[in-house]
Amino acid sequence: MISEETANRICEQIAEGRSLRSILKDPGMPASSTVFKALAADKSFAEQYARAREAQADALFDEILDIADESSRDTYTDENGNERTDQEVVARSRIRIDARKWMAGKLRPKVYGDKVSTELTGPNGGPLEIKEIRRVVVDPSKE
Picture (cartoon, one colour):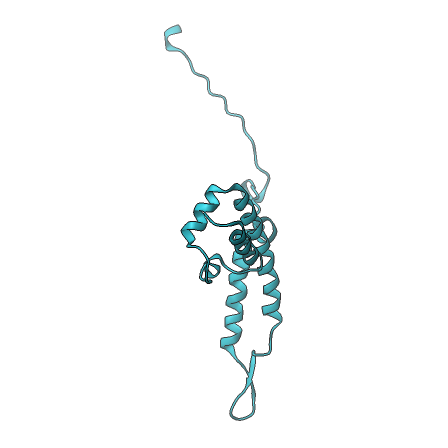
């Protein structure tokens, strides 16, 4: 199992937006299998971990704004003195934003997930028709 101090450290860093994988690479951290066993065995740690994952979604959402607002590297000056857009930097920022949007949506779907609604309509977009179908079974032995 893992100590309370280690569990707290893991959860604090997850809540700040770090991935579990990167946290467990830090010196003194347990193997991922040890963490998953502790999550299965310790209800208190599992609840703390779940709250940390929700906070992680909020941290990722905040990072989206930071990435979108950071434009200092979006342009460069070419050899002729012309300002150019660095398409690679812009594309990389888009990928970083999309990854965080996806992950936040998975961690907290009710808050950051795509809203999905289903609408049922009848023929030609009209209302649904509800029909009652009754099936009568005739007992051949009574005839």
